[in-house]
Image 1 (cartoon, rainbow, N blue to C red):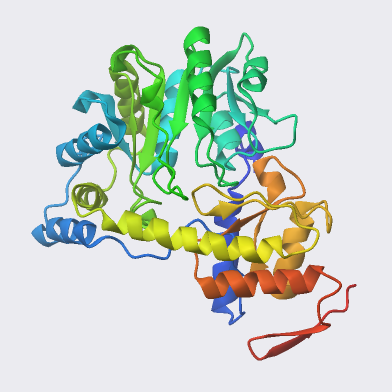
Image 2: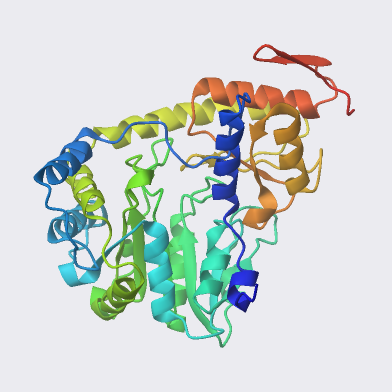
Length: 405
């Protein structure tokens, strides 16, 4: 079949593929533990359910404007004022079918062919492919010290004549690391001096631990919103555990927001009407679900860290937020894809290979599941890798004997 060059070069999402694999194995009755997922276990907030149900019960489900219904825009405006201290107008807001579409629309709106977008390593798996889909060139910046946080100088060194934008995701997927205020301020200043766009991916912005406060990019971006090149991305997927509703948004300069809305109008039209009302209900409703989720995730993180820190040969950085950690397993196997496949085959534990996030030898391990899944999953991984572990293990009623050491 004669496919386009783009179709032949864009890779499928490894995280979505792993979700599919885990679901298929479970359907076959396999005792799979999914430590690679990005979905909180908590339920949709009741205010979102009520708002969605009300519009469904009305039977009046029609097209919406490509940039979102007025009720959702008002909710986003109020959210931005409350959590970012920045007053915005409806024409600065674009509601999308998830944060992914908001980022995609922004990239298409700002990139000309072969212009570059910089982002730190490790990075969300979709950034490189989304940039390529928009005709751009992805430029990943790795910290020279091997950490998860490049310096501002290292970001600056990657800026060239074709650089158009920088993407920052904090807390970071996959590491859970929260970039420092000095780093964010430095990147904002760099983008201002070099006339670059800054896409601030705040998907996990309020899921931060140990008493930390979310970092507000507008503390450093003092320009009027309509002259600013800062684009703030957010969604209800993670903090409200509403992944299936597929609602995200961007706050940006009016000219850029208009372009993004035009692009969405040609791509998908407006997001699904019931989902928009659900998102408005969540944003306007009681916010205790976010605090409850954050407390649960912090407790899960602590349990996971206790297990990983007792795991010989593993190097791990404590996550500051989100619900991922990114331990280095290279003492056991340097090829992270082979390691992830080995763990899935031998002990039915799903993890995500670090190479997909730009760092070989690591695995992304999620702690958004249950405590039982976390403890049993790490127990299985250790049994599979640590030669000092017992020679046998039971997975459910299945007895396994390690025959590969």
